[in-house]
Image (cartoon, rainbow, N blue to C red; front, side):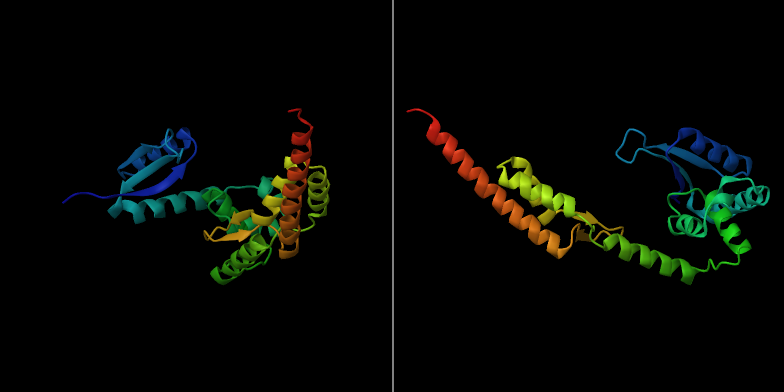
Length: 210
């Protein structure tokens, strides 16, 4: 029967991937390193046989728990505020397993909840905040009007970006970067910029001798 492999961990650094591979080998779990450094992914994957995945995960968790248990109170995460610690839990993919587990431990020591429901609500709040349009863009609006009236291409660009620019959410959904009012200003700046640019260009063309 053909063996299938599952990615256990990915690392941006080759040495980290090799360290994990040595740890797995020491615990008699076969693995191999997939080098994606030259690909768009740009990372290093440590893969294990699918049937060994759960065992490998358990061993890693036990190792991390031991490391967390040995940490003293002068470690940097102990200086983090409660919101910063929750940010680690919400952004688990950005942080190491060690930092995630330690942040959870510190929050427990503070008497703060870290259950799945709490983290789910925090993730929802973060997604809502990320979906909110950018605020307080008065400087961009004024600059856009000034540059548009001067007949510069920059005013047209600013207007177009304010009108149409979008940002992608973690869920993959695209939302507009600016509020509806700011987008209306962007549309006006864009149209005004094109009009002034056309007038200026027309006047300059008329000044060219036949």
